[in-house]
Image (tube, rainbow over the protein chains, first blue to last red):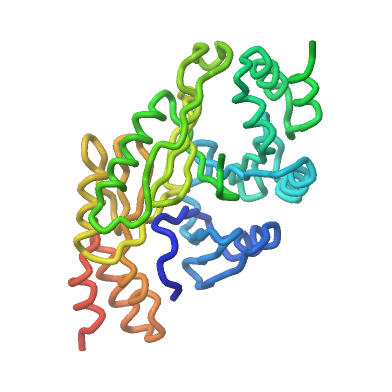
Amino acid sequence: MATIKQKISPFLWFDNQSSEAAKFYCSLFNNSKILQDTPMVVTFELEGQKFMALNGGPQFKFNEAISLFVDCEDQKEVDHFWYKLIADGGEESMCGWLKDKYGLSWQIVPRALMELMSDQDRTKAQRVMQAMLKMRKIDVQQLKDAYNQN
Amino acid sequence: MLKQKINPFLWFDSEAEDAAKFYVSVFSKRKGATKKSKIESISRYPIDSAQIGKPKGSVMVVCFTLEGQEFVAINAGPLFKFNEAISLSINCKTQAEVDYFWEKLIAGGGEESMCGWLKDKYGLSWQVSPVAVSKMTSDKNVKKASRAMDAMMKMRKIDIATIKKAYNQK
């Protein structure tokens, strides 16, 4: 068993798809691997971060109260995660949120959004936020246009 | 600025700042903590968000670090509630550490659940999990592993010594 690198691991409760889901997530992120795959619990890493997945039966369902926020460098990366994660039965939501085919919520967020929204010029930041509120997948160019608008 | 690629993002009605301070306090006061726990940033609503009852200037997003790991909390109204589908599992090395997190996290209105699970006062689920127990319950010797598992299934807070006894039983 791996030594403790992380004090806290997000722990995902699936009905019975934990192994399949872990493999799916590992296929999308760099520096990812399955660490241990047992019938009950699967331990895996995405971008070097540890997660656990349980086959625990149908008792609990994911909801938006906890989502996974993916910090993206650019539009290309946003597009990659967005289209891969909604594939095969996932669904788009608003403001960069989506649900994957297992019902898990993700936020696919370009770094530009956080930068523009926290701008010292509050009028510009407000325009960026208003533009973002109308989007499903976040569009960096449209955010910049809103920011630069006169 | 986030350093982690993937950040657990917690949705609160209006308790994001209180909750982040509570979690930072629990993790930063742990004896033996080697990595930092702190509030990294607090951002506020740039505009009135009437549909979720958040006035301009109220706390929107709090970024915080627990033992070097980043988390994000938002105040976004009462729409979604935590449940057990996603919990945070704490890797503990000793019984003293298990006892510490258990007591601190259920304080002030949290509740104990089974097999090392609990809910804190905000309804967020945690697992306080000793590494030694994970090793025993996943042992290649199936009989030993299942004795350890049976012992664990009867517990609320995990008691390492009792599980070890069941595991080593003849």
